[in-house]
Length: 301
Picture: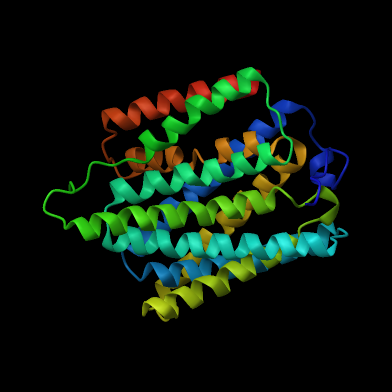
């Protein structure tokens, strides 16, 4: 398994040092992912979510390629292999998440997927020898329920839905979370010396994976409407998010970066409240408070 690079790697990583930098990068990733989901959600109300996903990932691949050319890097074969796994995980995660949200219950699919997106890389980090401090673990302990609470929405309750449909909601949430977890865990294995070339491949493979899933599910994925061009904005934000996550794992612990990055639903909830004037329920409010506590504990640890 490839070792992650330290702060002595690529130029962007050398700019900042210290454990607090991991928090800054990871929270920046969470904010960018939250913005991406918010903009993508608005577009998906007008056109197929699959069209948005394809354009977004294609745009992210192009933008990351431009960054890779400028920064350079010397990736080895294992870095390319991890990037392929990350792309498959990210593309599949997006596919099952969209399928779950389009035909299932958001109150079930979203929190399960967000929670597993944090747990999988945490397990990978511990398995590869990471040993966070006790205060950091306490922050992780606060972050996991925060992710669950802030992701839950009060939509149509499961009453009246068939037992089979409820099981499908859970399955979609689990598959989406595992996919995103594989994406995070795989990116955590790419060292700073590799540059951003492997990340370009991750986005490209993610785009192809989404197309394959869209075709398999019979969903309209070809971006025919002009509105689909807005997916490029979603892709730009997703590219920023993955770059920041990669820098976070190259600067510090994958365990810390993954948990803080998985708080991305918090920024989506806050944006929905401020821009769309959606109401934050009590559970989400408690989740936001726990998220703030988690960030403080992780930063102190």
